[in-house]
Length: 156
Image 1 (cartoon, rainbow, N blue to C red):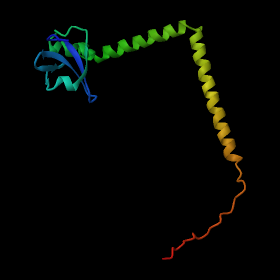
Image 2 (image 1 turned 30 degrees about the vertical axis):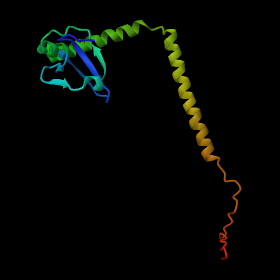
Image 3 (image 1 turned 180 degrees about the vertical axis):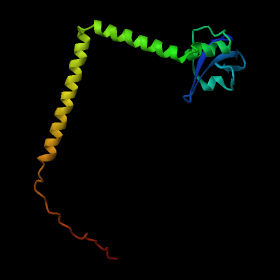
């Protein structure tokens, strides 16, 4: 498949490495530009090196500066206090939502029962191990008989 210029892709190599970038050339030469636009990657032997190419479906035709701003939400908000206030407001809304849902659902009850059963199983296993360690007695000890090996010498 031929990739188009200015398309955002993620290339997975056979050695496990992966690179994300914007396609510059994908014909005879395989050239990727980094998302921030500060570096260029030239793939020498794509048939042997590339295992898979993931095409990321978003508008890759934006400039690199716009792309940095879209991936960095902190740069959009100038005041960090505003971020903190927004986060606190979201937490308050979440806690109000949790108070409204006072009746637990069947999935929540099931998860709670499973957690309690796991804790009970762990406690029982610890109790059994402690009991085995405390009640262990040494059984019959068999004496070991040592001897010398017999060496037979062949006569000529």
